Image (cartoon, rainbow, N blue to C red; front, side):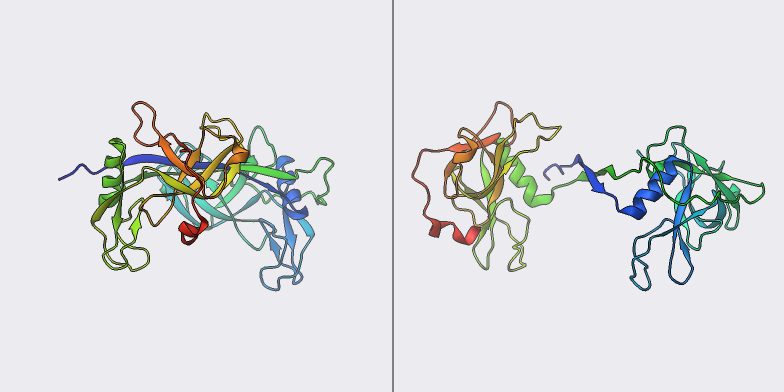
Length: 313
């Protein structure tokens, strides 16, 4: 039985967004140790604030300060914190309704164990030592047995408001390619490209998925394709990825290998980026020890006729 392949993979990118007046005030307030909500037309105070009433869809801008103390409405124990979570030791994820608010805020609650947490317990905000205008300015919530704190009546107007945030979006997972893609990867190690033919429509899919996406039937008939192919569509990349040692600009293209009915992705090299075009005939370039082509380069053949690849766009 062939070895089952698997590998850890990480998908990560910085997510950058601008802030409207409500979210800007909320995050700026956290930086200044002030928790702001927003009042709806019927008098409810929402924390965290939103820009539109979830019931009426009306725009709301009436900012209201609430207290840094509150009550746990529900919770769940996190026995094994993950990378990037608020605390490195076990803690509770809790919904906390701050005094003066009508909705609850989700955040970490520090506690020695799940027996120390209960619905209805009183808590307060523990502020981070360094605050930048982010939800992490609340380091966590902690148990509080003192008197109810009253807000200072802040208006939500700040001299230096936060106008944007950058958050790292990341997904860690283990990928196992399965039978069809394992055969595809094994073939690449021998500098061959194989797909699988659908027994119904006879189309050849590269990389194979084990089933025809059109007919829905299983595929098992292996077909070697390429190595040459045709550029069908492409884009010019102008933003450098931090984990790729490739100078920008460069071209990333859909390439229909000869004999395949589905184009695959590949980088185009050996030609100025502004000379890459639809119909360009290309071939793979391998580097020593690599398990897949480093890039594709022009073959020198005449461009393919549009009619030969128009169904693959």
